[in-house]
Length: 308
Image (cartoon, rainbow, N blue to C red; front, top):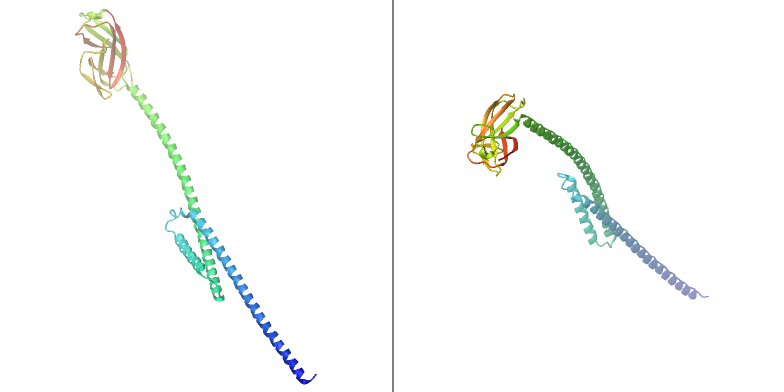
């Protein structure tokens, strides 16, 4: 083989070698670019996933806070609520910025990564504030529960005291009624008799000139002593009042009477007290009612039959 052939072959081989090297370099550069692009996409996906996780965590925190938000009225003058509101606004701002940010270059990915780390820090702060806020709400709820229990106990005690006071009042009222009744002037032996013009007993009521009521005031140490005015009401068979000797007060009303008489009561028995009514009309046979009053009490009400 001559020298020219050898040189030609060498040149061909050199050209082929250079071409192979150039091709290899081109392939390596292409592969490196593909690797870089894949790595960038992977980082982009990781950042997007972290952003999505943080968004879900923020929604969860916000949802939990909403359960206690209606109790914020009870927690007055508290800086926690203000801090939580500020942190929430910061998180929402970062999430808005990240949503608008399109990460393509390495610098943009690094900027987005920094934003996500900042977002992680803000959400961590938000979580801590929520725990503190919930702790305060729970503490307030326990305090309120204790106050409710205390108020309930006080209310029960008051109800018990009210019942006792009411029972004592009722007992005192009964005692007062008994005492008042014990002080009431009593009468016994009440009778009604028709008299003729000679003051003798008249069996025929149509001939009567007077009607006489007789009674006794028995001994009663509970009755206050002093003058006692006795009022007599005589009612005929027709239900009309006989006579008119004025009126007296009874249970808030003015009541007409047939006759009245004042006796001095010293606590001892006063027998045979008499009260008269002069007949000014012809009486009819039938039932006559005798009522005696004193000290705003009806002392007795008796019915007598007078015949012809």
